[in-house]
Length: 198
Image 1 (cartoon, rainbow, N blue to C red):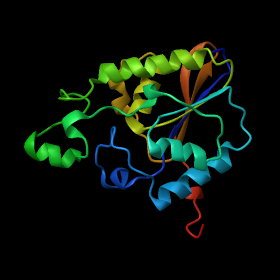
Image 2: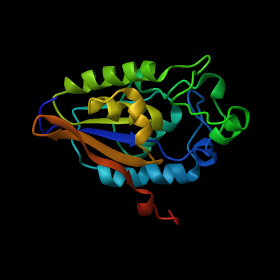
Image 3: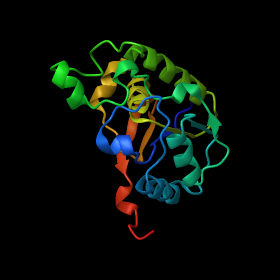
């Protein structure tokens, strides 16, 4: 990816589990009505932007966000699947900490799931693919995979994604300052643009 090119990170709109704080990895649940509105609001911001490549997670919440945003010609990439949370799927942090005080998905083993390093490997593959696209790239995916991808983009280990938060239907931009990879925009909240009557 040449200087001046950018990667646009789009987290999917609200789901019932994102609203409740449940870890949503591979469970394929739809957007809520608000999540659909959020996706359309993102579309008003992304309209007319030329992308050399658009990738989306295969999960419904990401693909629907992409579709409702009006972004066409997206390719599905399994590398953009959310972290496989294994036995913690569908559980909130508070519920797990009632059994394991101090628990964090970032720092404890994930039985039947992925390590943070394994998620980082997938994120790095997406970066390599974006590098070869020859222009701006849009990625429609999930909070943890995108946080980890951003950490990898600026040369940090994947675990440093824990320092970057992402709201639903947020927009972030990775790019360059001269030859240095930087985060240009982070966690831009477009929910304020949602018209409750729409």
